[in-house]
Amino acid sequence: MAAPDLTKPAPGADTAPETDADDLAGLEAGLDALETYDKERKPLHRVLLEKVLPPVVAIVLVLAAWQIAYSMEIKPRYALPSPADVWDAFMVQWKKGTVFDILWTSLSRGILGFLIAVAIGTPLGLIVARVNWIRAAIGPILSGLQSLPSVAWVPPAVIWFGLNNSAIYAVVLLGAVPSIANGLVAGIDQIPPLYLRAGRVLGARGLNSVWHVMLPASLPGYIAGLKQGWAFSWRSLMAAELIAAGPELGSGLGQLMDQGRDLGDMPMMLTAVFMILIVGIGIEMLVFTPIERLVLRQRGLVAGR
Image 1 (cartoon, one colour):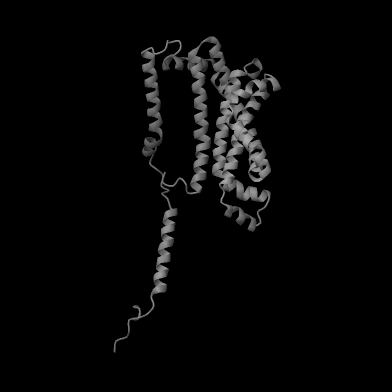
Image 2: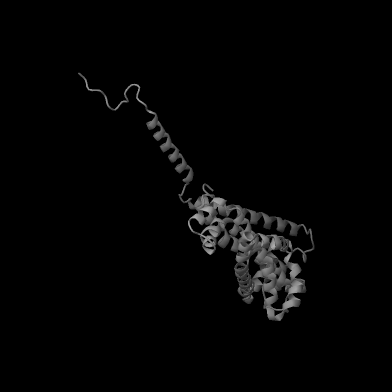
């Protein structure tokens, strides 16, 4: 007599538990696959093709259009110099050895002013986000200050503090602090309430909740606020340096532009414009973009890009 095959279910046996286990395993595998992204590094030629070539082509097209406009004399040549004239003006500053001094004067002011703005704007944003009556009182004021052109603060700051660095830092702070605070408020507003409740259940209250729950959860919005705060800091600094020029303030990019205006030297003014632009783009690409991508990647928001 042949033995029964125990590997096969007996006729009429209930196979539902095994089917449910297979479905659950398949579902878990599918969710794992959704959370998995390609971690392979792109080859160098592909990185150059995708990241470097487009801006290089854009710069070449802008320079070509500029040169064509110069050749066609759309504007008098003293008002619209050629790219070569601007490069010559830059080389004059380079040979004089003043380029790095000018850049450092403005950059050090911008970095210091931005760090002070972070130190003020971060606790201010936390208070505004969590205390309703303070939010109702000064929230609209912060939004109004954020939309106010920084150049409007330069004359009052010069009267209040005199023609010195204090006036310049006051303009920078008035421009950057509202942006940083509002960015943090927006980030905290987007935290799922479940995170805060889970933090309270685990004992995170007061400053522990701020440090371990709110700031990490609001990081994308906070970084967006920091980026905007830096942009306001840089623009406010240039406005202040352009208007509040004096011997005690040294020679920054704004003073270089003001000097070019006094001399009617358009290549010098455009040299200052391009140096301001290059510093702004450099800080954005070297500091904020890597930090932002790191935070978004940790949250699985840039997978596949």
